Image (tube, rainbow, N blue to C red; front, side, top):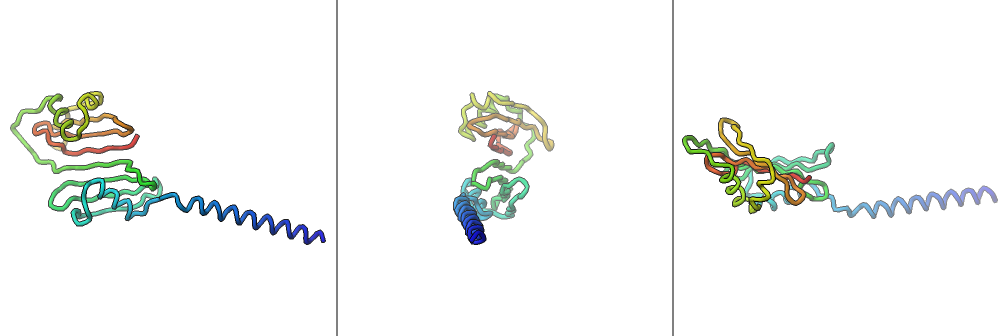
Length: 175
């Protein structure tokens, strides 16, 4: 009789543990983790593009950092998009690199003029932009303003052509 009680207790324990693990599996099954394809679709939607609008697509899941890395170029342009997206679907970083046309002979914009161009492009108030760091530098033989600031849980970085005011590149990263 004692063997039966021990066996029954063991069976109850096994069944209980099985039930617990099964239920916890159901609890975690619906966490909403994105697939690589869904992360790519999210990046395209954020960029305002469709699959037919892009070329040179690179997408992968970085197992070490647990993020999706999506890169693509808009057809007919040299505009490059680079995204880092979490498994939950949050865009952690977005970078857009525009064609870097060389312009010579024009007078450089002032910091104030560069900030005004950026405010118009981004829709972000000049006062917010001016709270950040603004630096004139020469990159790849061209003068540009590197402008960095924080707003709404993100860190922004823009490169503004110092002669034309054209946005050369920008990124937004969650902080």
